[in-house]
Image (tube, rainbow, N blue to C red; front, top):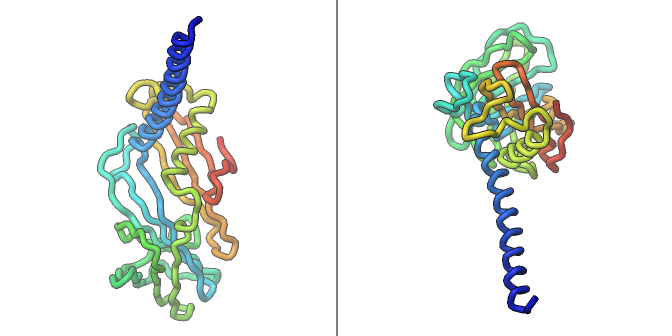
Length: 240
């Protein structure tokens, strides 16, 4: 084999390897894009703080409104959920608050959850700021409270998009979900529509600083894939 032919074959082999790498990268990215297409609840920002034995958090992102599990992401709206949790027992069902975001003051009435000893309010807007926000309120039996909430999500190594990429890779490797990305629409093996959510889990105490990304993919027929991701390093802590 002459030197010229060897060089041509070497060049073709190199081009073939590049094509394989680009193809794999395309399919990986394509799957990520498909996941983004059906992501109906994406929580990306998380603030928290504590004062006077009261814990408060603020979670912000976008979600589908109205929500329908149909495999299609329709109109998305911003949300910003304030949560307060008292260490002391309370009997009030609602209380008024003021949330200061920069120069803007947002007021409203928090309502007690029927499922836990916590109070919630959605300001219906996304807040993506490195500057702390300040929550103040008065509740019967508890001293007037002002809590500074810091954006702890800015310190996470793994942001929401990176968490979704990690989750996508786990789905690709999971037996039983091999057909999930067939074609241009996402369907499970029973051709049922899929939805997915990316949420933020917290232990409701900044003293322990435990936060996690929680990704869940679910179908109408009950199949579920979920994984918990450490935002500090991207490790999978649990999956089902």
